[in-house]
Image 1 (cartoon, rainbow, N blue to C red):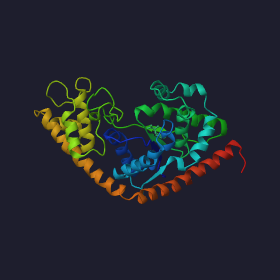
Image 2 (image 1 turned 90 degrees about the vertical axis):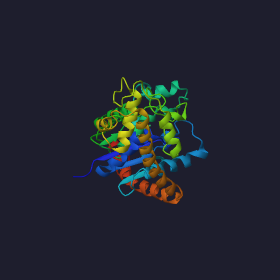
Image 3 (image 1 turned 135 degrees about the horizontal axis):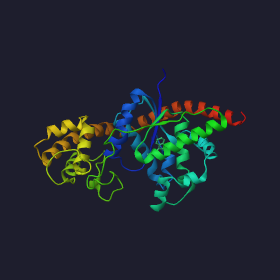
Length: 329
Ligand code: TRP
């Protein structure tokens, strides 16, 4: 049987952190063995918010290098830059003609961005339509999504259904691949909010490129809960639960085993060990990253090969779509 198809994109904005790694990248690396995977750098989505043209290119290559350093393997996965496949935009326009404006108006992410003060431009408004096109142009079976992108995936399913009923069966309705529990990391300085690089303090998150001393320090100063027991209880012990999740995901070690291991040992010792586990894992990623970053030509070549491969599938989809709609040629 042919492998199922998985598609996902990542916006090339700013520094990637541990939350991105444990919440998404690590999962991508696991998925590439089981599925036919298309992963892309969503530069078209990035410019729905202002970007510095002098920096964007570098950010794109940086994200690609980090994904490769984390274990994405160009032999197993198709890695490319979204804007290099014009079929995404072509399909986006077509799907737009099936999209009621009122539905986009109700999108949570759009409303939040406007409230944060982002200018309400048409690209930002149409963000979910382009995202649906990203997914459907490869006829994905499944999409790994975090909680914040769930509504957009639901939108993509609806629009696939609409296209099929108007023009005849064309798209599958992609299902959500949900993350393992605990994959949503919370801030180290405030476990009531998601770990985020836009947090006020850099002590909120661990950057994938933070140096070893910085990593140890951020874990050492991370907030803890009252008491001294190392126990997972997200209501009563949100901070320790978050640190347990991190430890468990990074070391591939079940939480109950960790609780056993640290029974009768204090927070300080637990944190010290966690710091070391993180340093070990991240310094190996950083080593790969530095080797790649020196060789920009190699990254560009991987992305070009990826684009060629992606274009094959996207092109096939679009000729069928054009035919179904009644376009000529
Ligand atoms: N909107 C996604 C995010 O912010 C990125 C993205 C763009 C995406 N296109 C996609 C994710 C298609 C999955 C599938 O995280």
